[in-house]
Length: 374
Ligand code: SF4
Ligand code: SF4
Image 1 (tube, protein in one colour):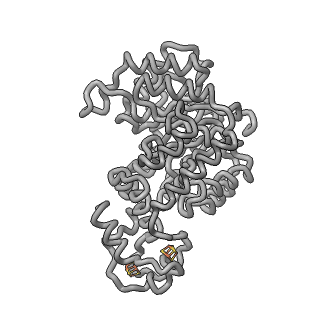
Image 2 (tube, protein in one colour):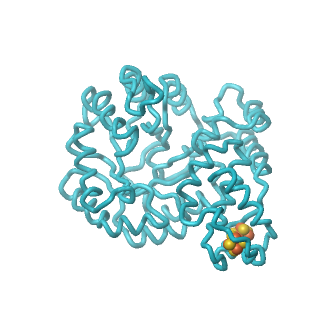
Image 3 (cartoon, helix red, strand yellow):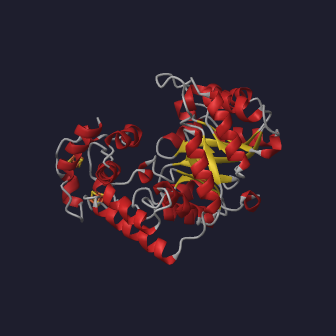
């Protein structure tokens, strides 16, 4: 099953930031432009469309019905959609999402169905709502072709999930060159775990939410010097296209021009030359110097914290802001990644600092995080 999903490196069309007619109304999708975007993507050889029950408050799925499902042969594309069970008040509501998604999409089946954002405390909700068995039953009934899950958690968690659910057809992971050896995100280790289980990967966040397409000037200059003809984003995508065992690398595209550029750079993307690889390594090294907190995510500090502050996760986001200069992006991640133990819960007891092998001024950094992200 798994190997049949694999193909040549593929660009996937993420439908979470579609063009809008009214920027204040997430449901006001510019269908005329979206239809052109869909057509250009298909003409370039793309097939994978990624949406979710919640994207654009449900309008992403209905827009796909209008722009894709009604206008192109069903076998010429694949659709992935997702259920966020942890955001649902009951098992019944969570399990009703699939029927509603199919109705909105105007199709009898989806090619890929994801239990979305498994990991952390959210896993228990998927378990409690019996979503794993539900998805498998729906697959047997023909309403889902491939069942998988997405996860923003560490490699050990992924290993445990794939061990507990060996019949998953695929998994969706956050992978990009900035997170590759990040001690919290662990992109490389997660890819290795997926390979160990023989499970192919859909890559999300190849550009780190657009951050790798909008690099600091001195970092961008390194890449531009190596290949003045390529966009910053193309470096991030090519890094992912080279990885084995992937189904698609998702790009959340918002304009016709983005689709044209991404599709053309995808088609022309070859393997990195030695000099390009060296330029990317140099750019990455420069980016990493901007991360000033030397946390290795060893988690020694976490065990002794009486308030359950999720210290390494928070420090990782402080670093992310330092690396990217984008506070709002880090703040958005903080809203759920630090929900279980936000920085403001710190009572300054000092137990964590006594445990930290890196001698990090954790208490002061938590104050920064609380001020920036809460
Ligand atoms: S100083 Fe704050 S973060 Fe550190 S252990 Fe004490 S309460 Fe937890
Ligand atoms: S003990 Fe120090 S290095 Fe380890 S996770 Fe905590 S803050 Fe990071």
